[in-house]
Length: 213
Image (cartoon, rainbow, N blue to C red; front, side):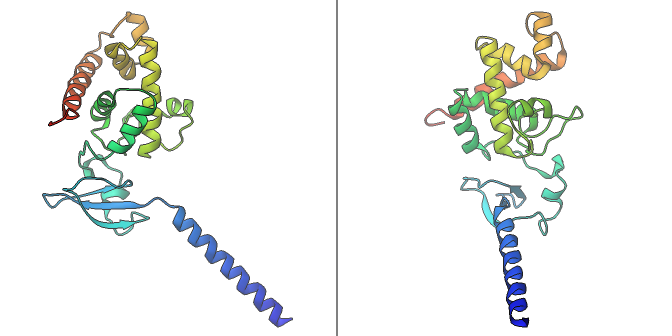
C-alpha cells in the first residue's frame, strides 16, 4: 500500500513539473540588445540588425531592470527597423503600403510597443480597445497583434475613402465621424499636423526602400 502511495505521489510531482516546464516554454522570449552607443534596448521579437548586439534572453523582465517592467516610454529607444518583418508581412498580406504603415507607427508611438495615450489608445499603432476588439485582438501591447489590427483598420479606411491617403490618415486620427461631418480633413490643428507628418514620414520610408538608398 505504501509502495502504491509513493508511486502515486511521484507521478503527481512529475506531472506538476511537466506542467511547469510547459508553462515556461509557452512564455514569450525577451531579448536585450546593446546599441552602438552602449545603451540597451529590450524587445519581445528578434531584431535583425548587425549593429545591435544580443547580450541576453529571458522569459520574464526580472533581472532586466526597469527597462521593460515599467512599460514607460522614456525607457525605450526609437528603432524604426525593429518590427520590419511583422510590418512587411502584414502590410503585404492586406495590400497596404508598407511605408504608410511605418509612417503611422512613427507618428503614433515612435515605435514604442508600450505607448499609451491619455485617451486609452495603446501600442505601436495606438489603437483603442474597442477598435482592436473589432479585429479580434486582445493584447494591444503585443507588436504582432497590434500591427495586425492596425493594418486591417487602415485597410478598411483606405477602401472607405477610395484609397485617398489624406482622408484615410485623417480618419485614423480624428475618426470617421469627423471626416464625414466636415466632408474632408477636419479643421483641427492636431489632425492637419498629423496628416502632414504621416505623409512626410511615408515619403521618407518609401525612399529608404529604394535600391541603393
